[in-house]
Image (cartoon, rainbow, N blue to C red; front, side):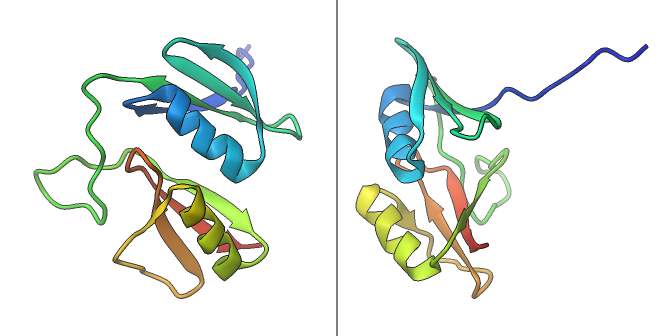
Length: 123
């Protein structure tokens, strides 16, 4: 018999869990579900997988696009939006930074305040 598994959250390491959680809380419109001094969980409003943030004092932001012998990204978030240009402007106003390299016309790659790349794409 196979044990039951369900993905509860994805955890992003960062220098300040509360600051990065606040960025994604404002960007996604999600609410803080749980909070500790070095860890924050945002709950998905539809009950889906949450997003967590953990403070790591030695955190090094990834380099994107990847380059040999430099910190590689381990994952990135894909975020659906209704209007790509409007969503990009909004994300930047929240503290995101547009990546110099944009591999596709219908996707925007940005970096969150801790340097994690994330992609905005149309529904």
